[in-house]
Image 1 (tube, rainbow, N blue to C red):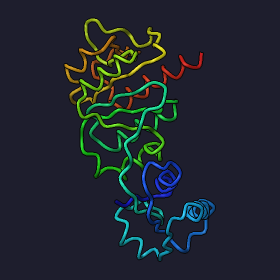
Image 2: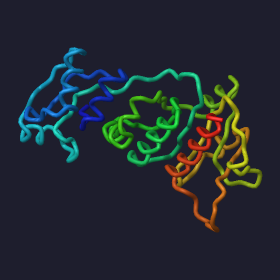
Image 3: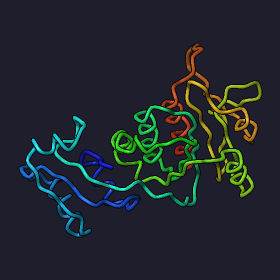
Length: 234
């Protein structure tokens, strides 16, 4: 597959989540950023193909590549590190998912579970919209969500769902557990009933104004991750 843009290419080279076989670069661009990528390629033994911009435009299909792209493998399946986990279900737009990943990584989250889906065709979009965070994160795709979420629960994770129900607690009044798994669904369908039933606690985001509509998934991720980061710092 081909990824495009300096941020995506640097992320792929630096994070070793995928094999980078070739880098295609505008031969006339000698900026600090591009020269740094050339140096990374030399150190890593990656083939660099210097090309004219017209040739790059034929090879790279997007409009925001900025004169650089790379041929890479699919990313490897990750093992999770210590720390909290975010499970994101049903965020279908790759740009929204990428924005959520960018926020999570910036606020100290390293582990992300995704609902079962084929993400093959959106790798480049995820790298771009996450500003490279997609390849910094440990990402696993759940194939049997109930079974796998139960396993996390059995190993001591406290499962929080973001869900506005009768027994849900105001997220601004909750002290998060040290070992937690946060489950958030897309705004169209939310979390599956079976997933909600696994939660140890359900949380809702209280609003400062009277407002009946739910926040979109990215905004909800922002709120949860920011609160979690704030509490961890204290």
